[in-house]
Amino acid sequence: MSKILRASYIIHRAEKRIKLQFEPDPAINIILKNMPGARWSHSLRCWHIPQSKSLYNDFKKMLPEGWQILEKKHAFTPPDLKPPAKSPIEKAATPFREPKENAIEIWEICQENKTALEDFTTMLALKAYSPNTIRTYKNEFSALLQTLKNRPVHSLSADDVKRYVLYCVETLQLSENSIHSRLNALKFYFEQVLRREKIFVEIPRPKKPFILPKVLGEQEIGKLFNALENKKHKAILFTAYSAGLRVSEVVALELRHIDSDRMQILIEKGKGKKDRYVMLSPVLLDILRNYLKTWKPRPKKYLFEALEPGEPMSSRLAQHVFIEAKRRAGLKKHLSFHSLRHSFATHLLESGVDIKYIRDLLGHFSINTTTRYLHVKRESLVNIKSPLDELYKSGNMDFNP
Image (cartoon, rainbow, N blue to C red; front, top):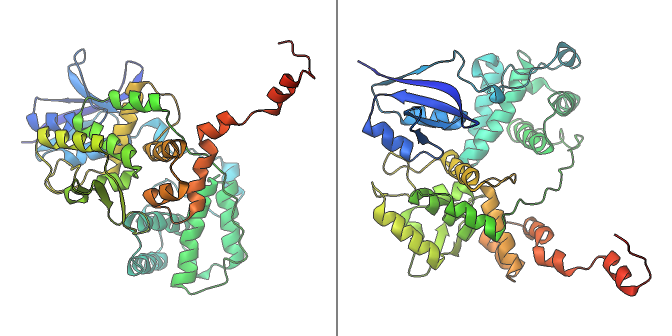
Protein backbone atom coordinates (compact mmCIF):
# COMPACT_ATOMS: atom_id res chain seq x y z
CA MET A 1 0.00 0.00 0.00
CA SER A 2 1.32 3.45 -0.97
CA LYS A 3 2.39 5.93 1.66
CA ILE A 4 0.85 9.38 1.32
CA LEU A 5 2.74 12.70 1.23
CA ARG A 6 0.55 15.82 1.09
CA ALA A 7 1.84 18.94 -0.66
CA SER A 8 0.21 22.35 -0.50
CA TYR A 9 1.05 26.03 -0.90
CA ILE A 10 1.44 28.14 2.22
CA ILE A 11 2.70 31.58 3.24
CA HIS A 12 5.06 31.06 6.18
CA ARG A 13 6.77 34.02 7.79
CA ALA A 14 5.97 36.20 4.76
CA GLU A 15 7.54 33.65 2.36
CA LYS A 16 5.86 31.52 -0.32
CA ARG A 17 6.56 27.90 0.61
CA ILE A 18 5.48 24.37 -0.28
CA LYS A 19 4.28 22.48 2.79
CA LEU A 20 5.13 18.75 2.90
CA GLN A 21 3.20 16.56 5.34
CA PHE A 22 4.04 12.87 5.77
CA GLU A 23 4.49 10.19 8.36
CA PRO A 24 8.05 10.25 9.80
CA ASP A 25 10.45 8.59 7.38
CA PRO A 26 14.30 8.64 7.69
CA ALA A 27 14.86 8.46 3.90
CA ILE A 28 12.76 11.56 3.19
CA ASN A 29 14.34 13.39 6.11
CA ILE A 30 17.79 12.81 4.58
CA ILE A 31 16.56 14.11 1.20
CA LEU A 32 15.20 17.29 2.77
CA LYS A 33 18.24 17.87 4.97
CA ASN A 34 20.36 17.95 1.80
CA MET A 35 17.92 20.11 -0.16
CA PRO A 36 18.77 23.84 -0.24
CA GLY A 37 16.08 25.98 1.31
CA ALA A 38 14.26 23.07 3.02
CA ARG A 39 13.35 23.81 6.63
CA TRP A 40 11.55 22.08 9.49
CA SER A 41 8.84 24.14 11.16
CA HIS A 42 8.26 23.46 14.86
CA SER A 43 5.04 25.47 14.80
CA LEU A 44 3.61 23.68 11.74
CA ARG A 45 5.19 20.33 12.65
CA CYS A 46 6.22 19.66 9.05
CA TRP A 47 8.91 20.27 6.44
CA HIS A 48 8.54 23.04 3.85
CA ILE A 49 10.58 24.08 0.81
CA PRO A 50 10.72 27.23 -1.37
CA GLN A 51 7.95 27.69 -3.95
CA SER A 52 10.13 26.67 -6.87
CA LYS A 53 8.82 24.45 -9.63
CA SER A 54 12.27 23.04 -10.44
CA LEU A 55 13.10 22.34 -6.79
CA TYR A 56 9.73 20.66 -6.23
CA ASN A 57 10.20 18.50 -9.36
CA ASP A 58 13.66 17.49 -8.12
CA PHE A 59 12.14 16.49 -4.78
CA LYS A 60 9.49 14.34 -6.51
CA LYS A 61 12.20 12.55 -8.53
CA MET A 62 14.17 11.73 -5.37
CA LEU A 63 11.15 10.45 -3.46
CA PRO A 64 11.61 6.76 -2.51
CA GLU A 65 9.42 4.09 -4.08
CA GLY A 66 6.11 3.40 -2.43
CA TRP A 67 5.23 7.07 -1.85
CA GLN A 68 2.32 8.88 -3.47
CA ILE A 69 2.01 12.67 -3.52
CA LEU A 70 -1.39 14.26 -3.02
CA GLU A 71 -1.38 17.86 -4.20
CA LYS A 72 -3.96 20.14 -2.69
CA LYS A 73 -4.38 22.27 -5.80
CA HIS A 74 -5.63 20.84 -9.08
CA ALA A 75 -2.95 22.64 -11.10
CA PHE A 76 0.17 22.54 -8.96
CA THR A 77 1.84 25.50 -10.64
CA PRO A 78 2.65 28.71 -8.76
CA PRO A 79 0.81 31.73 -10.22
CA ASP A 80 4.07 33.59 -10.87
CA LEU A 81 5.30 30.74 -13.08
CA LYS A 82 2.34 30.83 -15.46
CA PRO A 83 3.00 32.53 -18.82
CA PRO A 84 1.28 35.91 -19.26
CA ALA A 85 -1.98 35.76 -21.19
CA LYS A 86 -2.21 37.50 -24.58
CA SER A 87 -5.19 39.63 -25.53
CA PRO A 88 -7.27 38.79 -28.65
CA ILE A 89 -6.00 42.01 -30.24
CA GLU A 90 -2.37 40.95 -29.80
CA LYS A 91 -3.09 37.51 -31.28
CA ALA A 92 -4.91 38.98 -34.28
CA ALA A 93 -2.11 41.43 -35.04
CA THR A 94 0.24 38.76 -36.38
CA PRO A 95 -0.04 35.87 -38.86
CA PHE A 96 1.76 33.65 -36.36
CA ARG A 97 -0.01 31.98 -33.47
CA GLU A 98 1.58 31.99 -30.06
CA PRO A 99 2.20 28.64 -28.34
CA LYS A 100 -0.29 27.82 -25.58
CA GLU A 101 2.41 27.28 -22.98
CA ASN A 102 6.08 28.09 -22.53
CA ALA A 103 6.86 24.36 -22.54
CA ILE A 104 6.88 22.82 -26.02
CA GLU A 105 4.40 19.98 -26.47
CA ILE A 106 5.63 17.67 -29.22
CA TRP A 107 2.11 16.49 -30.11
CA GLU A 108 1.20 20.06 -31.16
CA ILE A 109 3.70 19.83 -34.04
CA CYS A 110 2.59 18.35 -37.37
CA GLN A 111 4.17 15.10 -38.54
CA GLU A 112 6.25 16.74 -41.29
CA ASN A 113 7.76 19.19 -38.81
CA LYS A 114 8.33 16.38 -36.29
CA THR A 115 10.58 14.82 -38.92
CA ALA A 116 12.33 18.16 -39.36
CA LEU A 117 12.87 18.32 -35.58
CA GLU A 118 14.38 14.82 -35.62
CA ASP A 119 16.74 15.78 -38.47
CA PHE A 120 17.64 18.96 -36.61
CA THR A 121 18.44 17.08 -33.37
CA THR A 122 20.39 14.40 -35.22
CA MET A 123 22.60 16.99 -36.94
CA LEU A 124 23.32 18.70 -33.61
CA ALA A 125 24.36 15.35 -32.13
CA LEU A 126 26.52 14.48 -35.16
CA LYS A 127 28.34 17.79 -34.79
CA ALA A 128 28.90 16.90 -31.10
CA TYR A 129 27.19 19.95 -29.64
CA SER A 130 26.97 19.96 -25.85
CA PRO A 131 23.79 18.61 -24.17
CA ASN A 132 22.94 22.13 -22.94
CA THR A 133 23.27 23.61 -26.44
CA ILE A 134 21.21 20.79 -27.95
CA ARG A 135 18.48 21.32 -25.38
CA THR A 136 18.45 25.11 -25.94
CA TYR A 137 18.46 24.87 -29.75
CA LYS A 138 15.78 22.19 -29.72
CA ASN A 139 13.51 24.34 -27.53
CA GLU A 140 14.04 27.43 -29.69
CA PHE A 141 13.42 25.54 -32.94
CA SER A 142 10.39 23.76 -31.45
CA ALA A 143 8.87 27.14 -30.58
CA LEU A 144 8.82 27.98 -34.29
CA LEU A 145 7.42 24.57 -35.26
CA GLN A 146 4.62 24.84 -32.72
CA THR A 147 3.77 28.29 -34.04
CA LEU A 148 3.66 27.03 -37.63
CA LYS A 149 1.14 24.28 -36.80
CA ASN A 150 0.59 22.43 -40.14
CA ARG A 151 2.83 24.56 -42.34
CA PRO A 152 6.11 22.74 -43.22
CA VAL A 153 9.12 24.59 -41.85
CA HIS A 154 11.19 23.93 -44.96
CA SER A 155 8.72 26.02 -46.99
CA LEU A 156 9.59 29.25 -45.15
CA SER A 157 11.26 32.00 -47.16
CA ALA A 158 13.65 34.66 -45.87
CA ASP A 159 10.69 37.07 -45.62
CA ASP A 160 8.73 34.51 -43.57
CA VAL A 161 11.62 34.17 -41.12
CA LYS A 162 11.86 37.98 -40.90
CA ARG A 163 8.18 38.21 -40.02
CA TYR A 164 8.60 35.50 -37.39
CA VAL A 165 11.55 37.32 -35.82
CA LEU A 166 9.48 40.55 -35.79
CA TYR A 167 6.68 38.59 -34.10
CA CYS A 168 9.13 37.40 -31.43
CA VAL A 169 10.31 40.97 -30.85
CA GLU A 170 7.01 42.87 -30.90
CA THR A 171 4.38 40.37 -29.76
CA LEU A 172 6.27 37.90 -27.58
CA GLN A 173 8.61 40.70 -26.44
CA LEU A 174 11.55 38.35 -26.07
CA SER A 175 14.79 39.80 -24.79
CA GLU A 176 17.70 40.56 -27.11
CA ASN A 177 19.59 37.53 -25.79
CA SER A 178 16.57 35.27 -26.38
CA ILE A 179 16.22 36.58 -29.94
CA HIS A 180 19.89 35.83 -30.60
CA SER A 181 19.48 32.33 -29.18
CA ARG A 182 16.42 31.67 -31.36
CA LEU A 183 18.14 33.05 -34.45
CA ASN A 184 21.15 30.81 -33.82
CA ALA A 185 18.88 27.76 -33.70
CA LEU A 186 17.03 28.74 -36.89
CA LYS A 187 20.30 29.58 -38.62
CA PHE A 188 21.60 26.11 -37.76
CA TYR A 189 18.51 24.44 -39.26
CA PHE A 190 18.37 26.39 -42.51
CA GLU A 191 22.11 26.50 -43.10
CA GLN A 192 23.36 23.20 -41.62
CA VAL A 193 20.36 20.92 -42.17
CA LEU A 194 18.76 22.41 -45.31
CA ARG A 195 22.04 23.87 -46.66
CA ARG A 196 20.55 27.29 -47.43
CA GLU A 197 23.62 29.45 -47.02
CA LYS A 198 22.23 32.94 -47.73
CA ILE A 199 18.88 33.03 -45.97
CA PHE A 200 20.18 34.76 -42.82
CA VAL A 201 22.36 37.35 -44.56
CA GLU A 202 19.31 39.61 -44.94
CA ILE A 203 18.02 39.22 -41.36
CA PRO A 204 19.36 41.83 -38.91
CA ARG A 205 20.05 40.92 -35.31
CA PRO A 206 19.01 43.14 -32.38
CA LYS A 207 21.89 44.79 -30.57
CA LYS A 208 22.59 43.11 -27.27
CA PRO A 209 22.61 45.36 -24.19
CA PHE A 210 25.98 45.85 -22.51
CA ILE A 211 25.29 44.55 -19.00
CA LEU A 212 27.98 44.86 -16.34
CA PRO A 213 28.71 41.79 -14.21
CA LYS A 214 26.98 41.70 -10.82
CA VAL A 215 29.74 41.61 -8.21
CA LEU A 216 29.77 40.91 -4.47
CA GLY A 217 31.98 42.94 -2.16
CA GLU A 218 34.36 41.25 0.25
CA GLN A 219 32.00 41.78 3.21
CA GLU A 220 29.06 40.43 1.20
CA ILE A 221 31.07 37.34 0.27
CA GLY A 222 31.78 36.80 3.97
CA LYS A 223 28.09 37.16 4.88
CA LEU A 224 27.13 34.72 2.12
CA PHE A 225 29.54 32.02 3.30
CA ASN A 226 28.73 32.49 6.98
CA ALA A 227 25.00 32.18 6.29
CA LEU A 228 25.24 28.43 5.62
CA GLU A 229 25.84 25.70 8.18
CA ASN A 230 25.64 22.69 5.83
CA LYS A 231 29.27 21.72 5.08
CA LYS A 232 28.46 20.43 1.61
CA HIS A 233 26.62 23.61 0.62
CA LYS A 234 29.43 25.76 2.01
CA ALA A 235 32.01 23.77 0.05
CA ILE A 236 30.04 24.29 -3.18
CA LEU A 237 30.07 28.08 -2.84
CA PHE A 238 33.70 28.22 -1.68
CA THR A 239 34.75 26.11 -4.69
CA ALA A 240 32.90 28.34 -7.16
CA TYR A 241 34.33 31.58 -5.76
CA SER A 242 37.90 30.40 -5.07
CA ALA A 243 38.48 29.34 -8.70
CA GLY A 244 35.88 31.37 -10.64
CA LEU A 245 33.90 28.34 -11.82
CA ARG A 246 30.58 28.14 -13.62
CA VAL A 247 27.85 26.19 -11.84
CA SER A 248 28.04 23.47 -14.52
CA GLU A 249 31.79 23.14 -13.86
CA VAL A 250 31.33 22.89 -10.09
CA VAL A 251 28.81 20.03 -10.25
CA ALA A 252 30.93 18.21 -12.88
CA LEU A 253 34.04 18.17 -10.67
CA GLU A 254 35.27 14.66 -9.88
CA LEU A 255 37.48 13.70 -6.96
CA ARG A 256 40.32 12.96 -9.37
CA HIS A 257 40.23 16.56 -10.63
CA ILE A 258 41.51 17.88 -7.28
CA ASP A 259 45.33 17.72 -7.45
CA SER A 260 46.66 18.57 -3.99
CA ASP A 261 50.29 17.82 -4.99
CA ARG A 262 50.35 20.48 -7.71
CA MET A 263 47.69 22.60 -5.93
CA GLN A 264 45.50 22.85 -9.00
CA ILE A 265 42.05 21.79 -10.18
CA LEU A 266 41.40 20.31 -13.60
CA ILE A 267 38.30 21.69 -15.32
CA GLU A 268 37.56 19.00 -17.86
CA LYS A 269 35.49 19.86 -20.93
CA GLY A 270 34.31 23.25 -19.73
CA LYS A 271 32.35 25.61 -21.93
CA GLY A 272 33.30 25.04 -25.56
CA LYS A 273 34.72 21.60 -24.60
CA LYS A 274 37.84 23.33 -23.39
CA ASP A 275 40.07 21.84 -20.65
CA ARG A 276 41.92 24.16 -18.30
CA TYR A 277 43.68 24.21 -14.94
CA VAL A 278 42.80 26.64 -12.16
CA MET A 279 44.45 27.26 -8.82
CA LEU A 280 43.59 25.15 -5.78
CA SER A 281 43.41 27.49 -2.81
CA PRO A 282 44.98 26.07 0.39
CA VAL A 283 41.92 27.35 2.27
CA LEU A 284 39.61 25.55 -0.16
CA LEU A 285 41.67 22.37 0.17
CA ASP A 286 41.13 22.40 3.95
CA ILE A 287 37.41 23.05 3.47
CA LEU A 288 37.08 20.17 0.98
CA ARG A 289 39.05 17.77 3.19
CA ASN A 290 36.86 18.60 6.17
CA TYR A 291 33.71 18.18 4.06
CA LEU A 292 34.84 14.81 2.63
CA LYS A 293 35.95 13.57 6.04
CA THR A 294 32.60 14.19 7.71
CA TRP A 295 30.01 13.86 4.93
CA LYS A 296 27.94 10.68 4.86
CA PRO A 297 27.79 8.91 2.51
CA ARG A 298 31.22 9.89 1.27
CA PRO A 299 31.27 10.82 -2.45
CA LYS A 300 32.46 7.99 -4.70
CA LYS A 301 33.13 9.76 -8.00
CA TYR A 302 31.95 13.35 -8.05
CA LEU A 303 33.02 15.95 -5.51
CA PHE A 304 29.38 16.97 -4.97
CA GLU A 305 27.07 14.02 -5.55
CA ALA A 306 23.32 13.68 -5.64
CA LEU A 307 21.57 11.35 -3.22
CA GLU A 308 22.28 8.51 -5.62
CA PRO A 309 25.97 7.56 -5.15
CA GLY A 310 28.17 8.15 -8.18
CA GLU A 311 25.79 10.70 -9.76
CA PRO A 312 26.55 14.45 -9.84
CA MET A 313 24.38 17.03 -8.12
CA SER A 314 22.20 18.94 -10.58
CA SER A 315 23.04 22.53 -11.50
CA ARG A 316 19.58 23.58 -10.34
CA LEU A 317 20.18 22.29 -6.83
CA ALA A 318 23.54 24.09 -6.68
CA GLN A 319 21.81 27.31 -7.77
CA HIS A 320 19.25 26.83 -5.01
CA VAL A 321 22.13 26.54 -2.53
CA PHE A 322 23.23 30.04 -3.59
CA ILE A 323 19.68 31.41 -3.44
CA GLU A 324 19.22 30.08 0.09
CA ALA A 325 22.59 31.49 1.21
CA LYS A 326 21.70 34.88 -0.27
CA ARG A 327 18.34 34.85 1.52
CA ARG A 328 19.88 33.95 4.87
CA ALA A 329 22.62 36.57 4.44
CA GLY A 330 19.98 39.25 3.78
CA LEU A 331 21.59 40.36 0.50
CA LYS A 332 19.21 42.48 -1.57
CA LYS A 333 21.29 42.75 -4.75
CA HIS A 334 20.06 41.00 -7.89
CA LEU A 335 22.59 38.16 -7.79
CA SER A 336 22.95 34.62 -9.14
CA PHE A 337 25.35 31.73 -8.69
CA HIS A 338 27.36 33.20 -11.61
CA SER A 339 27.98 36.31 -9.49
CA LEU A 340 30.61 34.28 -7.59
CA ARG A 341 32.55 33.87 -10.84
CA HIS A 342 32.19 37.58 -11.61
CA SER A 343 33.36 38.45 -8.10
CA PHE A 344 36.39 36.16 -8.42
CA ALA A 345 37.50 37.89 -11.63
CA THR A 346 36.89 41.42 -10.34
CA HIS A 347 38.67 40.81 -7.04
CA LEU A 348 41.70 39.35 -8.86
CA LEU A 349 41.80 42.38 -11.16
CA GLU A 350 41.61 44.73 -8.18
CA SER A 351 44.52 42.90 -6.52
CA GLY A 352 46.73 43.57 -9.56
CA VAL A 353 46.55 40.27 -11.49
CA ASP A 354 47.08 40.75 -15.25
CA ILE A 355 43.85 40.46 -17.19
CA LYS A 356 45.43 37.92 -19.58
CA TYR A 357 45.95 35.49 -16.69
CA ILE A 358 42.40 36.08 -15.55
CA ARG A 359 41.18 35.23 -19.06
CA ASP A 360 42.99 31.89 -18.92
CA LEU A 361 41.64 31.10 -15.45
CA LEU A 362 38.08 31.85 -16.56
CA GLY A 363 38.48 29.87 -19.78
CA HIS A 364 37.42 32.74 -22.05
CA PHE A 365 38.13 32.31 -25.76
CA SER A 366 38.44 36.07 -26.32
CA ILE A 367 40.08 38.74 -24.18
CA ASN A 368 37.10 40.97 -25.08
CA THR A 369 34.88 38.85 -22.84
CA THR A 370 37.24 39.34 -19.90
CA THR A 371 37.64 43.10 -20.36
CA ARG A 372 34.08 43.58 -19.08
CA TYR A 373 35.59 43.40 -15.61
CA LEU A 374 37.61 46.55 -16.24
CA HIS A 375 34.31 48.47 -16.00
CA VAL A 376 33.64 47.28 -12.45
CA LYS A 377 37.17 47.51 -11.10
CA ARG A 378 36.73 49.60 -7.93
CA GLU A 379 40.24 51.09 -7.72
CA SER A 380 39.98 52.47 -11.25
CA LEU A 381 36.89 54.45 -10.29
CA VAL A 382 38.24 55.55 -6.91
CA ASN A 383 41.51 56.90 -8.35
CA ILE A 384 39.87 58.95 -11.10
CA LYS A 385 39.03 62.45 -9.93
CA SER A 386 35.86 64.15 -11.13
CA PRO A 387 36.44 67.49 -12.92
CA LEU A 388 34.00 68.97 -10.39
CA ASP A 389 36.48 68.21 -7.60
CA GLU A 390 39.32 69.89 -9.52
CA LEU A 391 37.18 72.94 -10.23
CA TYR A 392 36.36 73.27 -6.54
CA LYS A 393 40.05 72.99 -5.59
CA SER A 394 41.00 75.79 -7.99
CA GLY A 395 38.79 78.24 -6.11
CA ASN A 396 37.09 79.38 -9.31
CA MET A 397 33.67 78.27 -8.17
CA ASP A 398 31.46 79.21 -5.26
CA PHE A 399 30.30 76.14 -3.39
CA ASN A 400 27.41 76.42 -0.97
CA PRO A 401 25.81 73.01 -0.27
